[in-house]
Length: 76
Image 1 (cartoon, rainbow, N blue to C red):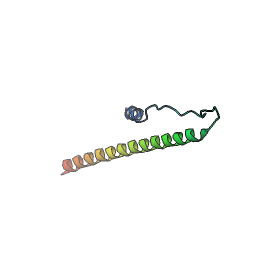
Image 2 (cartoon, rainbow, N blue to C red):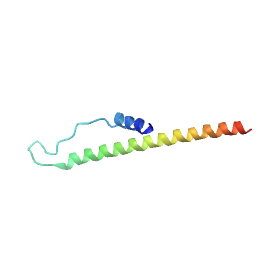
Image 3 (spheres, rainbow, N blue to C red):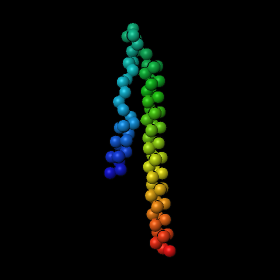
Image 4 (tube, rainbow, N blue to C red):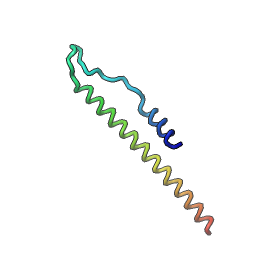
């Protein structure tokens, strides 16, 4: 179930964007701007995934802390 939530979150973050054409106005292949934008998009996606992973880890740590606190209260 958690995987689906992550998938939906990533879909919202990584919306479809218009691609830059590999060819310039004269019809000559020029991959430089295409590659630059592709690299920027890859970096943004990587950062978004890393942030989502960090949020999940923090949520997990909070849940563990709550469980440990409840166990400590129950033990005393």
